[in-house]
Length: 453
Ligand SMILES: Cc1ncc(COP(=O)(O)O)c(C=O)c1O
View (cartoon, rainbow, N blue to C red):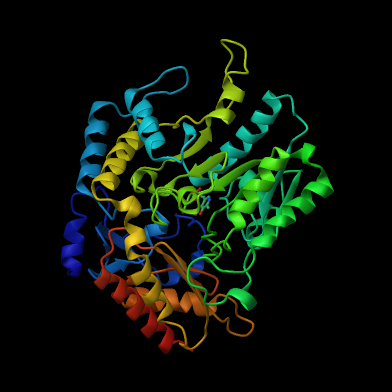
């Protein structure tokens, strides 16, 4: 596409494709001054590609931000949103309801792990995390266990940006600027063991025993003070950390033994990323609560959701007096009509195209392609599962993140969108990716890594 065609693409929109001023938009999770000195603008998207403002096609190696699982601008979803916007734009869900909300929840239950029957809608992953933590506290309180207020996260965990999420999260930079706001928090050690597991394919062999650290925390704090443990089944944002074989099962057993709720943060792993609807199914471990967002609506309309087992839901809902609001929590936009319409169309598309299982079929091909980068300069680890891969580069002395950033820019210039966390390149394409596009992703990245000092 030429620059002129890219401008034409945006002609029907109410804004220019080349903004006159970049200063007003305070960009999230971005080095604002660095970006604005050398902006990268995306103006269009279809299926596996973005269109840059200069007309170049950019292969989407990251499904946007791990969220456009069915590919971009899929017609059935576009149509569903337009129809809903023209029929009923918004309806409250506080003491009111609309059919799409109930339908969306029921369809989600069909793909959830056995025993998870209830859905609480939010607008983002961060809100889902805060909601799940609050549900955990409410559950224990409803059962007369109100002293269980401690929440346990894990080092190198990312759980969004709410005060709850940063408290249980384990990304140092997130916590440094704001401190830790929840008073009763502790953390499990992360499971990244490069000395033993570097270049492991799929689930690494070593480290299941790290789950036993939860026993240590139980001894330290006493189970009677611990409400929940929250982990990402595969940690995404801190660089694709795949759990060691047996680790999650062990965590489940210890939580069950001590009456602690287990929360899986599946904001990234949900909706087919690992070749099953949720990581819980992929690993055969059912938590008490699951958080999600991103792929829920194929990222077309912001939406998040928390899924609860019947036991958790019933303890809170059936335990309250008749006529009382059982969970004092919710958002104006919980189950927004446009998001529900988008979500229903998304789930249908996932089912019709087998997208929630497709990553399993492509996994070996993807894994081989990712590990073909082993041996390139500065590549110190490669990790993968489902349609996710992390390629870790060594840091330049005294300049952590510089090599990763250069890789991002060089890939973009060569027509590939990647995500970087420090010096780790993360890849997670839309689940419609074809083998030749997988080849293109790793050939492009390989060329960039070879050329980088
Ligand atoms: C595991 C996990 N939890 C929570 C979040 C936060 O989601 P959001 O950015 O939609 O608030 C993310 C975002 O990447 C995530 O990866």
